[in-house]
Length: 309
Image (cartoon, rainbow, N blue to C red):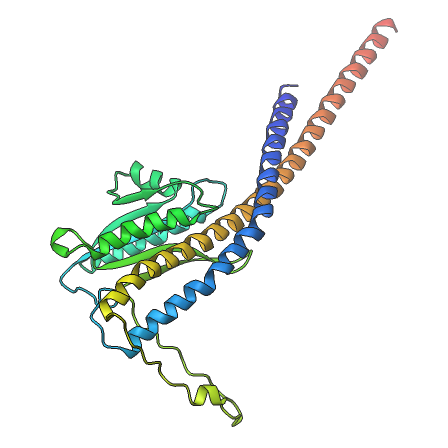
């Protein structure tokens, strides 16, 4: 009887958890479509401003901090985008693991990384381990707004533009999870500043196919700066950082929601399987108890019959 009560208690508690997991899965399912669309809608603007900056780097000779690396400064800023809530599987742990690897690599190369963390889970992780954190932000990691992107970008831009003698940084890295689809979300390390030129491979044409005229005659753009190069780039730099950080926050939010939905779906299935297994064990225990009671009754009846005989 005692084992049956234990089985019933475990079944009841598992059923309660199964309802919670299923509710979380349904909530994540209702949010994932919007989160994905918001992340995709922000991408064209970010790509456009990034292409513009890349073109400036490739086709002009400038010495602005947006492209110039200060070799004498060994301080590096690292921003880790984690989650505010749990129940998202290995989402936060994967980001922390990648961040730890980046920090170790920077330390090994003689750099002095300064850590910035977004998300309550990451902040709690590093504070519990007494890790120095240069800046923290919390709240709405699954639905980030423009305000938090602006706040983060201002803090990082200030650190980047501060002279080395006053504690400024020479590089800026962002660790986040890139959303590819509902099944695949990859942790990426993005070097945001200084901007480096990315060479795009030329298209490969097979079987002597004619090369399109727009590719054949593609020319490098020419730029005229008014009132001047520094003034233009000073205006572009804050927009560039804010737009890229905002895109990272949005794609990280979509990844977090997808991870939460997948994790809760798996947890719901596991809870249901556990309930089925416990129910079978409860039925087996009940059947064994009934069999034992019948055996005792039959034995007692046989004993009475022998005494009467």
